[in-house]
Image 1 (cartoon, rainbow, N blue to C red):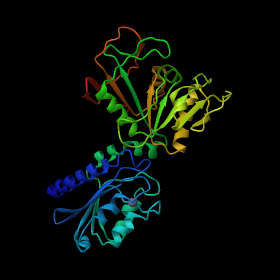
Image 2 (cartoon, rainbow, N blue to C red):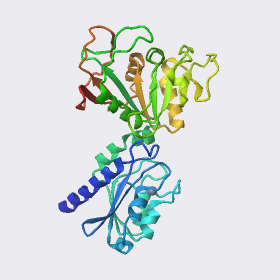
Image 3 (cartoon, helix red, strand yellow):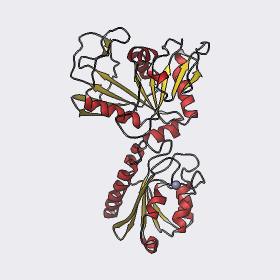
Image 4 (tube, helix red, strand yellow):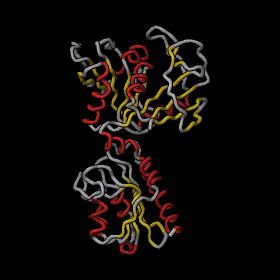
Length: 352
Ligand SMILES: [Zn+2]
């Protein structure tokens, strides 16, 4: 039995590797990987490649050269097979139709139309179903999806770079260059983080002083929606967020009169103050944006930390010392993990 469990875990690990290949392409769907195993050998593999496209199980089964082996095979899949008609027919039906006798599942799907029903459908049809193999790893891989489905808001990542003495920038006038804390290597890391997100948020001061473009150009994948907060219409019209033609969501106060906007910019009026973060997260949930990265400035990051409505923080500390400047936010706990990227240290905090 233990041996079986180890074998199952090894094949589930392969499912996880495959699932991760969909990162940045499948949201708001989860990342899922699947393998078909016949007599201890993998005869088919697949993963969910792109939102709206076939699920992992479909791709794995389609990749099997000799379909006659399926009735003696085991299907491993990192997430419970679906049982409802969404953009594609249900995978549970496909498994039953192909007469696959055994299915090993990593974790259950929290999505209300699936949760537990995919497994029930398979068992009804006489398929042996094993659940909970590498369950924590499978949930962790899709933590943005899990948070979105269970808390009905996007997963929130706070991200900033600070000098080694704890400042996110020197004090300066708008359009004076910002202190450069990231190097070429850690910049790629930032762009990768953006490419994996659905939306990136910055505050008014950051939009004015840094004139950021917030693109993910150093990493392949989708361009996340850019969101800028501007309660009193103070951000000048010549900022890149408004002029480069890429979509931007401009969040302004309920009473603010706004100038004319280019077609790439959408205006959203929300209450500011205490109500802003919950109202914004509600709106993003409604738009099915599953992963929000908050990039600054310090005041906005602090208000997320104070609200408790954040899930992780990724803090880059570079070798530069600034002596004085804009103090970085602080998190009063130890990082879960620390790694090095270029000349920067990256601390990863979790809020749980
Ligand atoms: Zn499916």
